[in-house]
Length: 238
Image: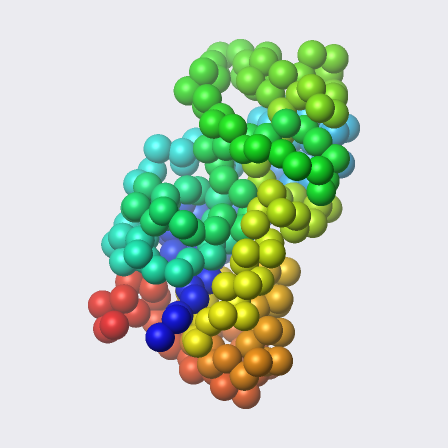
């Protein structure tokens, strides 16, 4: 059977990485001056890169050295699309997973969306926290207080006011959904576009779905099995 796994932040919680909407989540923590959905935008990167990069560094890059957990190891040979940018599936050995929202360990040239771009390694270890702003501006090649198109760099992450492009392998992701005999959602709140896309494809092609979560979100599809458990319990029962 060709099972497609689509994972969210709940899968990385056991690695010590906060989920997005839990009590200690990224979005709950937010920013002193902005809500997370204002902060995690291309517009904020363009207009207030100092605050954007400091927020991104503290909320994400500080987790860059965390390791995969048993769920990532179990998924290492599976057909996988992850919403997570933490890169833990790659660390666990999955060679062909799709990081549909980008990757923490990579950056791209700051380009117009839709134009070709190649992800590059982000040398986070060069950041000096004692001179955080200057260090981050050097890392992302911001020389005039705002990032310049086709000159500066941008974290390889899909922001709220951006859209899926081939940089994020969206066509491959849709093809994997269409080819699946079953789609298993693990640790996701179904609050992002990629999960809605997968549910729509599952409905249109009558692909069975499993939802793995201690408090699973109800989805509108006739062929759904709810597994009210965390991802670790699920893999131990399969």
